[in-house]
Amino acid sequence: MNFRAGVCALMVAAAAGIFCCAPAYDAQTLYNKLQSGDLEERQNAADTIDKIVREGDYEVFARGAVSPVKSNRAPSIIYLARIKQPKARAALRQLLRLDTRAMIPYNPIRMKPSSEESDSRILVANLISEGGGDPGAIETLLEGAEGQPPDVMQGTCYAIGALHDDHGLPFLATAARHPDIEVVRAAAQAAATFHTPEAREILKSLANHKSPEVRSEVLSGLAIQEDASVVEILEGMATSDPSPELRTAAFSQLTHLKPAPVPFLIEQLKGKDETNRQAALETLRLLSGQAYGPRPELWARWWQQNQKSQVERP
Image (cartoon, rainbow, N blue to C red; front, side, top):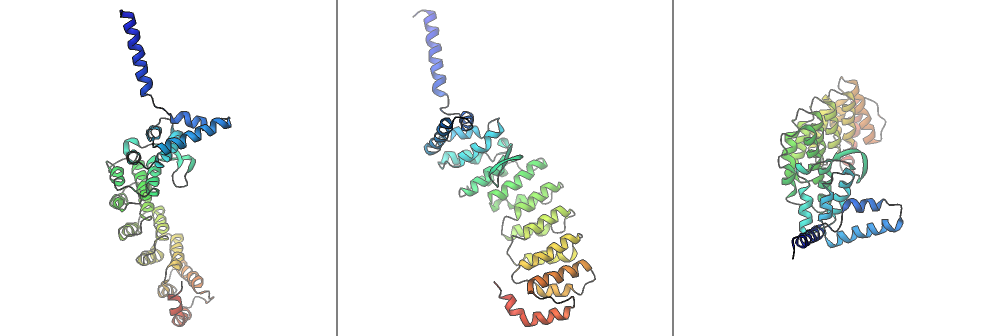
């Protein structure tokens, strides 16, 4: 074999090696075809994606999930989550790492594209939770998460709430003391998704926060808590929150408790604060269906006659 022939043979072999190693499918190409004006091409692309998911070729979507094209990331993460093989689950879990984080134009809770960008880890966490959870996910999410910039801390809080692993509660407790208000709000929202004493303790610690926005998040969080321990927090906010609007909202939330703290409400009718008196009166009327006025003794008499039925109400 002469020199020129040898070089040609090497080039052919190298090209063959490149083509053999090239991915069989490319997420970008598939997504472009899904948007084609040709119906047959769109159907072929959809069929190909279904085939990739069935066969467990997770690497196609693992590559798409870290694509420089932001619009490719969310669909790739969603398709990757549909593949249940261990390697695919591990690849999905790795997308919780800080070095794979990206802001993507997708709502991770409503599961649809959005003009407002969100932290990609929230979508990943939500899909892992919906898929039955992953015991290694929270450790991956929290690795290096302490001391990050506020926007990253905020995204981590929301991802903990979406993942719903209570091993993330210590991080939320720390985030609740962060100087950035948006981080604290995110911690409160995430803590409210857990129905545990530790989560309620986080909400309680924020009930007297200087920011009315944070205290409003606390009220929203308490609305989905069912434990009797929230009564104390709500009563405290109803009587002493600096904001009249939040005090009124706290009184209103007392109607959802079973049993409702009627004696507390009657006692508020004797107070000096007009906002509190009116809020307590309105709450009592909602609870009882009665139209008594502001005189505490009338309500006390009603309570004495109806206490048993009110306590046992469904």
